[in-house]
Length: 129
Image (cartoon, rainbow, N blue to C red):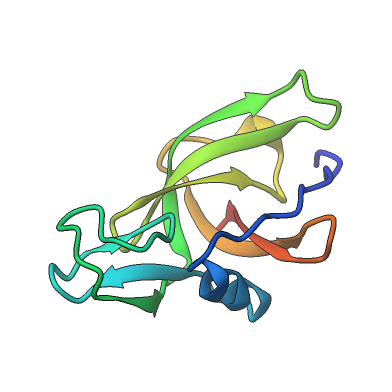
């Protein structure tokens, strides 16, 4: 397993506070539009599909599959950056952790895990399921 790298502390934006509070509780939250019934990520004030401001938060299953990835080997502590397609149908940019970097594969099942950032705020990442 690769050595764990330091994770920069996130800087929440106005309106994303519930997302980060959910992460502190071990929940992956997604924005849900009550007008068009679609979920989206990253949290924002308007639905990117229909531009409605009628949004709520939904807890995601935390499961998905690797859509694409790249192993960043030139970093002091190599890591995997990836897009994961969540079971809810959206893609999320993330890191794949807790695994052999050379064994990550497209369509590999993954599950959400929360890793502490430098200030302690948990950040959602994914590990092999």
